[in-house]
Length: 204
Image (cartoon, rainbow, N blue to C red; front, side, top):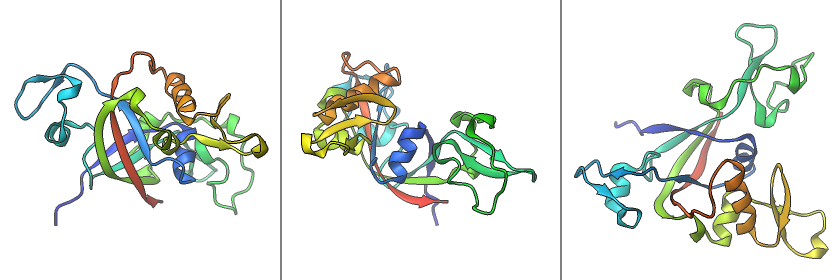
């Protein structure tokens, strides 16, 4: 039986929580240029990246393959090696019987890039991959990126925001723009991006 290919993907704490809560089912990542098609060895522009090029070149995989999530993590407790815990959901992710739980600020958190496969708790299956311009994102896709509905003043209509960014907008696309910019992305440049849709298949 052929083993399903898995690749790591880095996610911030707010986006991890969005996945766990079922609010995030897609991610956008910049296409790196120059883009050299592995199959034919020639350089392609963004509008030349079609289904065949995606299948041969997408660094995140193709439908049916999997992504394991790398997130901020640590081990706590007096035992060796300690209890595996995650910054995104600390301390709720610890066993309920654990006593003397340290404050989050007292833990030596390890960056997501240093997470090993064996310590990952979230497994995703890719359901679709495409390439498009960043600003082509729709309202529904912005919501699927993890943009959250602000419910404190529902009588004022639907307002959207991103966890950790204290700006609210009636347009979920605007909230996604703020999310993109918050991690160093250039919205105005309107880059080509990989659009990777996924479903959650495992929480361990």
